[in-house]
Image (cartoon, rainbow, N blue to C red):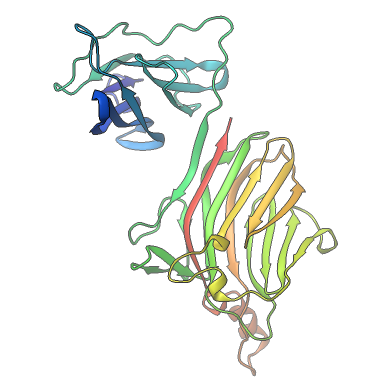
Length: 342
């Protein structure tokens, strides 16, 4: 089932609410489980500008005589005050089973010119109203999760917003070996919004007389540095004296983070609560600190620490080689996901 709202006569700008059945599963006592996907997307000139998707399962008990076997309701809401489009799927046999996905979008925050409805002929569909849902005065819109980055590296090639000079694709593990990358967000994380920044990083090498391994800078938030003997975090515009240091009991090794696959210690997570409290997790450890919730966060920059360079370089060549990512320590990187909740 597809509800496609369009904002121009040529339908180059659309807001689509799509329900797709993925699987039927017959269980005991005649119960049927229906697995489905619910997607809401904004399309401009044939390209999805942004989307949100959830997969869920509804359970249906055997119907009484004359009842529909699988009764599912679809509602669409546009809440202009918060630039939200909200798509809700409800199991009418059990209204506690409900799935909501939505978009926060300024470009589609207006009344559409019209709507097209498409549905699979294998299913019976009844149009109860060809309009957006009417809101009650006390309506409170749900908090929506918005995906800014979802780079899973399932195939070679850089996803949107991602760039690396040194990146080499590892087809066995579907990840990148690299010493640098930049990840631009599709849009900034808004002020006072809860957010999660997630990825896997596993150092591939260590230099004997170098303590620093890599740095991960999140614009207007701060910089996370992995050292052999600990984890260091410096808030945006902070000095070295302001850094928070979590010292490890023993030096880290490559196998701590990657052992025929990423380990749980390779998981990096930075979570802001929208009120200025920040939790940073890596290598099984946690740092609790604060951040400026009024800042808009829009980029992430990764750099491996500089390797030892050969002696005898001129000052000019030395500076040039320092800036070359091929001379930085490599790491394995995968599964970059950045979301906010508002």
